[in-house]
Structures are given as C-alpha cells and as structure tokens.
Figure 1: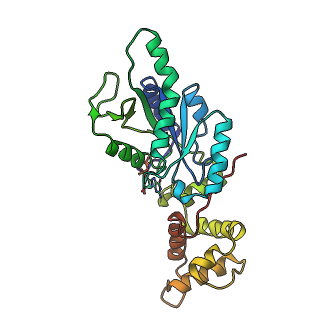
Figure 2 (figure 1 turned 180 degrees about the horizontal axis):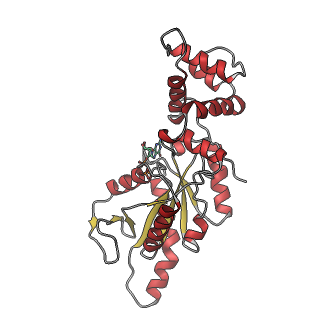
Figure 3 (figure 1 turned 180 degrees about the vertical axis):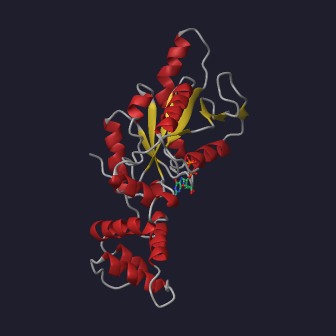
Length: 281
Ligand SMILES: Nc1nc2c(ncn2[C@@H]2O[C@H](COP(=O)(O)OP(=O)(O)OP(=O)(O)O)[C@@H](O)[C@H]2O)c(=O)[nH]1
C-alpha cells in the first residue's frame, strides 16, 4: 500500500486506532528489526498510553542477530516484552503469541473479577507501511481454522481471527506513519523499502548505502560483486559494479540508475549481508 502522509491523514489514522484500541486488550507493535528506531512511530507511546504491548522485531532474518539481541534487551528494560520474528518463514510466531497472551492476562483477570466468564484476549497489529503487517496476519490466520463474524462496534469488514483458545486478532492492522522528516531516518526507511521508489532517488540512496557499507562492513560489496579493492570513491565503486554486471548505456557509459537499483534491491534481500542500521540509545 502506498500512502502519502499528511496531517489530515495522520489525524484520521490516529482516531481510527484509538477507536480500535477500545476493542482490544493488547497491541502487537511491529517494527523492522533492521531499523527498530526508524520504523517506530514517533508518537506511539502517546497513542498507546498504558496499553499492554508486545514489540515484534519483524524481518529478523535480514537483521544482524547480535543487534537484535541488544534491541530486545533495550525494550525489555523499558518494560516492553519483545520478540524477534521472521513472518515470511514463521519463525518466532509461537513465542510472540505466548508473550501477547501473557501481556493480556491482567486485563482478562480484571474482566473476570467482575464476575464474568473468561473470554479470549483481543489483540491488534500496528506498524508503519511495509513492515510486514499483512504477512504476519496472514501467517496467523493460516494457523487458525476459525474466523469469527463481525462484532458490534467493529467497522464492517473487520473480523476477528481466533488464535488458539485464548487469543483473538483483529484482522485489520493499524497503519502508522514513520518519522520521515529526519533525513537520516528517511534514508534508512528508503533503503529497507519502507518508502516507495517514487518518493526518493535511487542514486542518492545508493550513494549513502555504499558509504554506509564501506564504513560499517568493508569488503561486503567486494564479496558480492568481486570488483576488486574498494576504492573509497563511491562513484568509482558504483561504476565498477555496473561494469561488472554489464549495465552499459549506448556510448559505453555505465547505467548508474540501473546499478543503484540493483545494489539497493540486493541489500534489501540480504545478499550483501545482514545488517541493523539503528542501535539502541
Ligand atoms: N525477509 C522477510 N520479508 C518479510 C517479512 N515480513 C514481511 N516481509 C516482506 O515485506 C514486504 C511487506 O510486507 P507486508 O506484509 O505487505 O507489509 P505491510 O506492513 O502489510 O505493508 P502495508 O500494506 O504497506 O502497510 C513483503 O514483500 C513481504 O514479503 C519477514 O519476516 N522477512
């Protein structure tokens, strides 16, 4: 889904999420494990206030596992249980469901303290575009046999997916906006694919990416493209990669755009290594 965020849209989204929050006991906050800070909504703590929450570091298969551990510790310190997940392959899902059910337990207890029979805890997934909300929900829905019908108070079309005996999931995720004003954050969102191609210039992003890799993972580009020693000159590095792949324009010039698109694509696919671009404070 390609979303252009503007103040009116943010207000509408915020209201919608606040409406849905009334229906649920626990929130699954989905972040990109490669950029846990940059993929976080800037006002999430205000938005969720005292809502029980589980932080899911999704796409953990593409991130640096050591950094993922650091991030999980960081969130734990903030009182937010976290879990690393690969929604594509279904890794970490069971742990996520257990933590989610645990977080909802006090709310259910409170409900039962009023003399009512136990009910399933209700949760919803929230996250910025492209973080993997649909993939996670589809995976969870695939695991469960039953989909319950509409409930009063739920927008038409929204349904609850039963996840085992004690958990239900709202099948419509909350889409949040990222911190796109900060150029550093915008770079990280673009390079990981959270911002669509139309909004940024691949060559700009690629120059930053090559600089980042040269500093943080010297040898990574060389290992993938075999272009010889990294020169420290971004233009020359990109030129060498383009030449290696045969990306020539008429007249023998290198197609810089095509080269940039390739490097970004392969970075996103993890072919240049597994990296986490944000570090906990
Ligand atoms: N490698 C990997 N890719 C993932 C994972 N989860 C999602 N993806 C990919 O990330 C992309 C976005 O996933 P979606 O589920 O469409 O993300 P979304 O948050 O629903 O996106 P919007 O509809 O834009 O809000 C897809 O290409 C998925 O295949 C994961 O855990 N690992």
